[in-house]
Structures are given as C-alpha cells and as structure tokens.
Amino acid sequence: MADTLIANRRHGAIVWWPTLAGGLIVLSSVKMRLLAALTFCCAALSAFEDRTKVENDVVRIVEIVSAPRTTRTMPGDERSRVLIALDAGNIQRILADGRRSRQHWGKGQALWIRAGESYAGENIGSAPMRFVEIQLKKQAPATPAARNHDMDPVSIDSKHNVLLLENGQVRVFRSWREPGATEKMHKHTGAGRVAVLLTDLEANVRAVDGSTSAVRASSGDVLWSGTVTHATTNLGTKKFAMVVVEVK
Image (cartoon, rainbow, N blue to C red; front, top):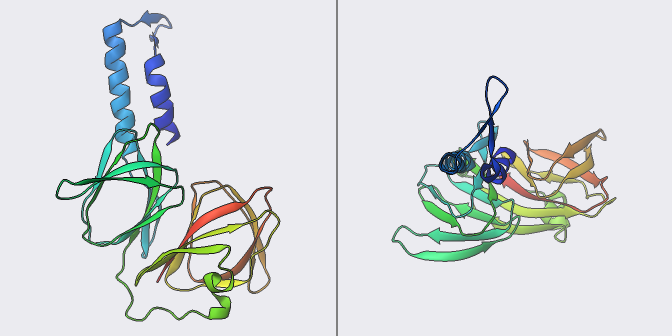
C-alpha cells in the first residue's frame, strides 16, 4: 500500500527526469500529463492487486486496497469469504441487477460472502480503503468442535470480545484490551484462528503450560494459529484491538 500511496502523491509533482549522463531534462506539459496518467494507472492497478498474507490448507488471506473512485468486482467463487475493513470509508455496492446501495464501513467491520455470491463495490470516498479477505478452503464441518463454556473467550468476557457474526463455518468477534490488562485464559477451537490487527500490538502471550512469548506487530498485520489456549497481556500504552476469525 505504501508504494501506491507514494505514487499517488508524487505523480503530479514530477517535473525533472534524470538522464544517463547526469543531466536534467525539462518535461513538456504534454509529457508531464502523460507521465502522470501512466503513473496513476499503474498505481490504480497495484491498488487492486491482491497481496497474499497467509496461505495454508485451511485459508488464503489477502490484503486488498481499493483506490478512490474505483470499482472492484469479486466474482462468485467456490470459497466462502470473510471481508474485514482496515479503514473506515464509504462503499457503493453494485448488485447483479444493477441496483446500487451506499454503505458506510467502519474500521473493523466484517462482511460474510457465501460461496457463489458475487460482489462489486465502488470506493466513493477520497482516500484508499484497505480490506483483509479470508478465503475458506474447506466446507463447514458436519460437526463443529465443541466449545468449553468456561474457556470460551466470548462467553467468559463478552465486554472485551464482541460477537460480530457466526455461521456454520466461522465465528467472528472484535477483541480489545486496555493497556496493562491481561485476558482470562481461553481457548480457540476449530481448524484455526485468524487475528486481524486494528492497532499496533505489543504484548506478552502466556500459554496453558505457563510458557510465555513476546509479540510485536503493526496495525493491519494478520496472525494465524491453529487451535490454541492462551492469555495475552497488553504491554503497550494504548488499547489494542483486533478482529478474530475462528474457522470451524
């Protein structure tokens, strides 16, 4: 995303072009416009390039950047997907019959897209919007793994773990913690867990056997694990927040 944003900022400010001999050529206004248009097109194309963050036998996770005033079509796929917004903004959803509906997305908002469902959205804002798309490679299990109520994060601490959606394939909730605070020991069941960070994270994670590990990550990063039992302490000076997707 950084390269795309830099290109957008710079394409209108390119006035000089270095030659091989070390001299400088002053570009004509026509050439400047052509160069700016070419740079903008390249930036727009890179904005729609899916960047794979995680891939294994359970999920493929990609980051999508939607440039302002551009439309992205997600064709119907055999995989169901969860779409999570990393930035707030306004999207105009375009339905298959041509109808349009304007939607405001909040940071951390999640959308379920079932297998076979196509989706087209236009970023009608003035800033790029980033999304994380979690593609599920397997169908819903016939019998999901059972949860222990006393170890289930949503059940034991609904204040800090707010359910966003749940169906036969996933459970999605927003999780946050105050600076210096520690979660209750809990377990993520199922095929695996995705954590999409909405803030920077500086934490200490304690496993059920008492061992600990330090975690430092940035807003927008994606963390993957299998079934895991742990408790996290926020070592930062600010609240951390993430969207957790448990794959059943």
